[in-house]
Each structure stands twice: as C-alpha cells, then as structure tokens.
Image 1 (cartoon, helix red, strand yellow):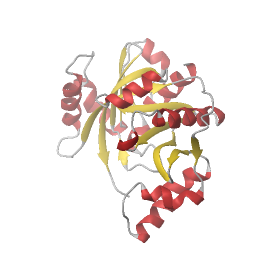
Image 2 (cartoon, one colour; image 1 turned 90 degrees about the horizontal axis):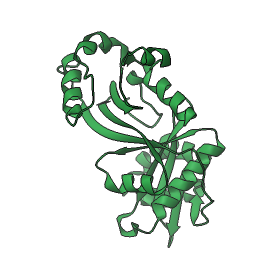
Image 3 (cartoon, rainbow, N blue to C red; image 1 turned 45 degrees about the vertical axis):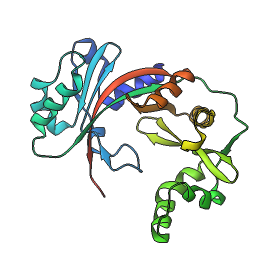
Image 4 (cartoon, rainbow, N blue to C red; image 1 turned 90 degrees about the vertical axis):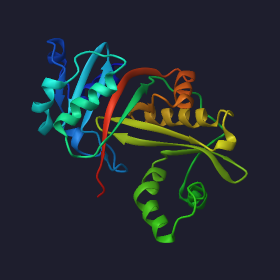
Amino acid sequence: MNDFHRFFLEYMGADEKALHSGERVFHSAVRTSPETPFDFNRHHLIVAEYNGMLIHSIARELISGYISSAPQQTSDKLLEQVDDAFFSVNRGRYYRIREMFRYTVNHGYEEEPQVTILTPEHREMIFATSGRRGADVQEWLWQKNVLPLVKEGRRISVIRDGKIVASSNVIDLPFAAANIDVWTHRDHRRKGYGSMCVKQAVNWCIKNDRIPVYLVHTTNERSVNLADSLGFQRMSREIQTVITRFR
C-alpha cells in the first residue's frame, strides 16, 4: 500500500516528518478546487482517521482559525465535533458534512467476460439509464461528462437484453489516483454485476498506472459489503465537508 500512502499524504497536504513530530493539521490547495473535471463539490475540510492518527486537511485561508478547535482524537462523536470546529471558521456559509470510508486494492482480477467496455456506439443505451433529458442537455452531458470517459475505456458496464444493468466509471483524482464508482439497477442486484464492473475498473487502474480508490458513505451497506467481498482494504474513515459551487 506504499503507493496509496504517498497518494493520501499528498492528497491531504500532510508531510511525513511533520506527522512523526506530532503535527496533525495541514493546509492543501486541493481543498479549494473540484477533485475531478466532473465534480462541482469542494471539500474545504477533510478529517481522516488514518494509520492510527487523526489528520486534518483544510483550505489554507481557514487553517489559522481552525487549529485551536480541531478535535485531537477520534470518538463516536467525531462528526459532530468536526462540524462544530468547521462551523467556527465557516460561519454563515452553507455546507454539507458526510462520513466516508476510503478503500484501495493493490492487485488486479481475472478479466470478466460478461463486462462490456462502452464505446460511443452505446450513447443511446447510456442515456436510457438516466431518464428523459432534453436533446440539448444530453449533448452537453455527452460532450462534457460521458464521451471523455468512454473514449479512454473508463466506462464499464454489464448489458442484458439491450440495456445497461450495472456500470462503473473510473475518474481521475489528483496525484495519480482514480476513483471507482458503481451503480446497479434495482431489478438486477444480488447477481454480482456490480462486482464485475468494479473488478474491471480496478484492472483499468492498474494497467494505466492509477491507484484504485473506492470511496463510500459509511452507511451504504451494499457498497461496504462489495468492497469487503472483493478484498479491498479500508484505509481511512473520513469526515468531509462539502461545498457546492456551480461553474
């Protein structure tokens, strides 16, 4: 997991020597910009339980006011403590807060013959899974969000009877990592389709020199179970603030 360790410290803006010296609050430029080209969210603060430490990563302009109120140790009240600490430096501005698990895996899987790597020819099938949208909206989404992934083989699906029933996307994160998401149609769950897509997504990461990252809400039991079943290693529990700014 050395590659993940390097990624995670860079992602959090944390310095190895400073950590060994007891420093736990760091600023990071990543906190004030979207992590991916497809995301409007900024995480101005992430607090992670990682390797037995509580590491805080915060936007530079907020760090001086935050240090004095930053929780010093983990507890079952950590989310509430982080919420209050962040509110003290972000008072009056709306944000959401969530609790996540971050996983990784350092091996690939056998190729899944039931999985399809989507191509531009699957455009109609892709939009059939997202409900009705106007033609102009579809074109904008296709050019901005979908086509860049499809062109590089990053959109991976299981197709049954001419319909996409499960799908994963592989989306670059900073510092040579990539986030893997997964979706399965409610009528096709418990058939292993989501696992097939995630396995192929991991293979894509390994072949393309990306560190696989699988980020899930702690309360998403299906996703947590999927990660466990595939042998993923849970690397951190994180409290993340979420601020949405539309371009």
